[in-house]
Image (tube, rainbow, N blue to C red; front, side, top):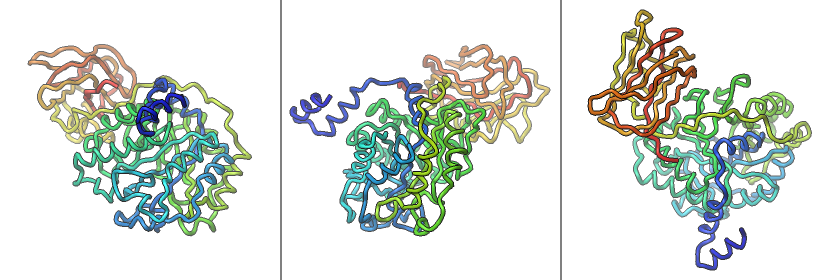
Length: 468
């Protein structure tokens, strides 16, 4: 492989192009295999280190000058040694947080580390240090970017291209990236939808650059726990009240906590106790690993660029109590993630009789906490959505509210005024996913033939998925 890269360089290609060629030559693994390998990593280090490190709040002033970022003793090798002391298997660094400051040598904006007093590529030093310790590398990237006005009301096509250019740099210039952890997208506090910055377009770009890079969006709060929506890995931020079911989970997952009280370093950290290492092992790492869940513990470097002594001691204590014993249980098969825009979202809908507070509109409102619920006296309820003219689509997803009630049913679509079949049969899953060859139609409907209780549909979704 080294010889291949040398020949590419001699041919006049850049190192970045050579690295990309090397990454693309790696055999592409199945998504299930990559998910299994991710879960088998078991335990890693989240590293929140960016311009908020030098401010009082975790969300930095979007106009904070680059000159504020000035770690005087930056030592990524210390971070890697600390991770190794806890028997962690990987790290994940905040390359860009919500205020848009880039801590790599980017050509997309002057708001980056090379225009700070440090003038060193932190991402480069991080990946080199962690790989030198045999640790895998993951990168965190925020879609929300308040400095560049990538926020609701301002988003343009230029923003989409900036995101793509930045991801090309990160996935081309820094070697193999195990996972890209994305934040600030489709969250109630960011309000940036998967349509404003098109998820499918970004997802397929990542896979084209690094086929074996997992795309992990931090979006667990909104979507059902049964199926992967807009992510390869289901994530749970405990501090935000997101907790995995250790008894029922069957999806590849990640759970996260900071070892201190905040994600980014605060002046009080050196004098305050960290989280209990025993609890981190007994209440997080072990039970989560037994539930197909990887645990990531955030450790925030200080303003010098070093991890505080009390955090170092906690990591060492974890390492004395726990070690990675190898692969976890075999991950159950699961559906490929849903990555496309929902063609049925906020479209007109019709249905059989229901109560006014549970009408058909609630099944297309992109809100899983509401539902269309039939009235019990209707023996064979039906639901229908009107698309925006005749549209191409190849997937329909029916999300039942709380539990499966619909047993046998038919799915049909209307083409040129004629109703045609998509599916007839039984599906006892709460989230019923139907993928099929692409068809064209202006309406899609559900006809319930048998049920265990009153049908209640949280979301009825239609997708035109691109070839992966």
